[in-house]
Length: 276
Image 1: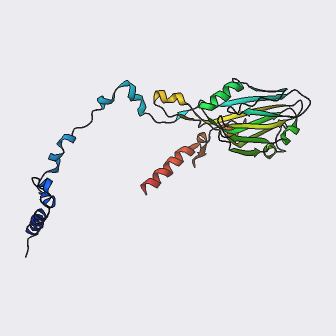
Image 2: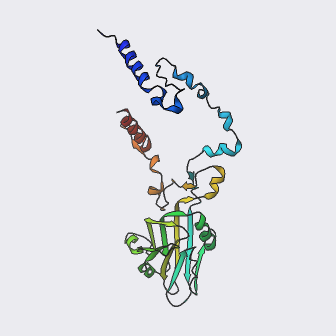
Image 3: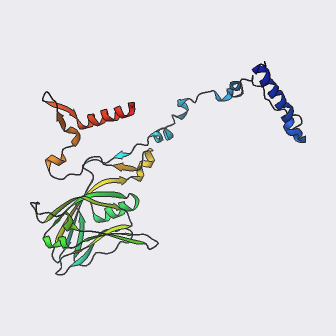
């Protein structure tokens, strides 16, 4: 019966005979392959056993770059209230945003941003684009809702894409105010390339209240933070039953009183799924 160790040594010796000196190539005659299985590989890599000391990276210029979490938008800093007024006796096309094209407003049409100015918003959109999700649209005359909003995106190379949003789709007989629509489904990415263009009736006033859901902040790079900032607070609707966070709602327990919250139940379900 052949011993396994002897058999392995026989194959090892045969391999060394075959492949020593790298196939008898002239430049490597003084070198030999090492097939010795008893060599401790850790000894060959002793130089790499040293652990990296965290103190080596405590330089103040690099320490802050370890943070990669998204920023958070303050709940009170995510609203744009834009008022558009037509003082003439004929309908004209008003323009909101559109920083790159910078088209002039028609005579008699003014666009104002209550929180700052239209110029500031346009300039900021060039370097810090943002995303709008949801709007409230108030008008002085309900006939203004018949005019659609055209969301236009134009690149420097000439490509133009147009989407149309119809305010009447968000109106309802159940609304108490026939001169306002509230749409949570309205969505738009605002950058220097994008604009909203719509026909505003003669002598009409339109007020848009946009909700910013996400935005970029390039200055975060200076602190090593993520350039994206998000808002996790639901859009305000004005209805207390909807504006209260769902996480605060608690299912009633069998014994009465308050049970576990929705958020707690979701965590428990996720934990059970992982255990499976």
